[in-house]
Amino acid sequence: MDSSPQLPKNKRNDQLRASQAVITELEMCLTQLTGQMLNTKAGLERETSDRRSKEDEFRRSTEQLRELSARLQSVREEERTRIAREIHDELGQALTGLKMDVAWLQKHLDRQEPALLQKTLAMSDLIDIIIQAVRRIATELRPGILDLSLVATIEWQLQEFESRYGIESQLISAPEETVLDTDGATTVFRIFQEILTNVTRHARATRIEVSVEENDTFLTLRVQDNGRGISKSEIDSPKSIGLLGMQERARLRAGEVHFQGTSGQGTIVTVTLPLSTTNAQMLEDGL
Ligand SMILES: Nc1ncnc2c1ncn2[C@@H]1O[C@H](COP(=O)(O)OP(=O)(O)OP(=O)(O)O)[C@@H](O)[C@H]1O
Ligand SMILES: [Mg+2]
Image 1 (cartoon, rainbow, N blue to C red):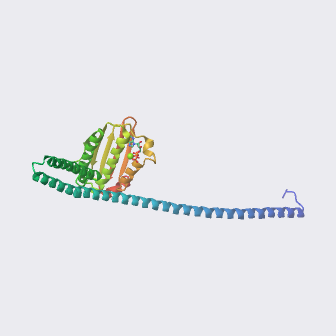
Image 2 (image 1 turned 90 degrees about the vertical axis):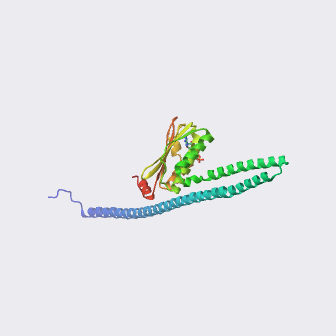
């Protein structure tokens, strides 16, 4: 038997109406909320697709920048090679011709003209000095020996470095020859020059040791100085454009440059370059 007190009929109707009013209000709120949620969802979807297309755009521009930078590097290298050859061949030949002419003059000059003879001797000496300077400038622009041997070029650069900066420099180990192509050898050599410049500018080192290793897949160049040691913050700084440039240059050949410093003990820079594009892919995949 139902024990709830029986409400008069008109009171029950009032309650029913009140409940219906609440339900209608709730339904309206729900409709509003659903509308707002749908709007938010549409907004989020728009944002996600905007973000995705911005990411795609960013990726594309980074790729384009990379390609541009690669193109610039190779144009710069081609230009250096061309100028070095022209300076060496054309100026070199002209100077050699001039030297022969002066020698001819010396031979045919009247012995009675000692002042003139003296002058031609001085001219000949000057021409020798200019020939040396032309060779040096051409080699500094791009050592021709790089087309023949990376190891020999590194050895030559180390001797130059030691005599110019008085920093004891030693190639402690290297293979007889490497199988790396000229393009790869140029990449390694330019990074090597940049490492040496950093040693002279920042390391306060008295000695450097260099090694070159090559196995079936990679070539590794290691340069160790005994200076103050590069710090972690210098390695990670976005302002270290020189370090980034070396890494980017290696990356264009799917290689890597790694820096490691110990305070007061020195810096080690390791450059790894795959010998072929197949190995390049392996290095990228971290195998
Ligand atoms: N061998 C080194 N020993 C100690 N510190 C180094 C060495 N190489 C680089 N550093 C530090 O790392 C910093 C970044 O080097 P990075 O080559 O990027 O720049 P930079 O040589 O100052 O300028 P640039 O852009 O002309 O190369 C240097 O300023 C220096 O403080
Ligand atoms: Mg630098």
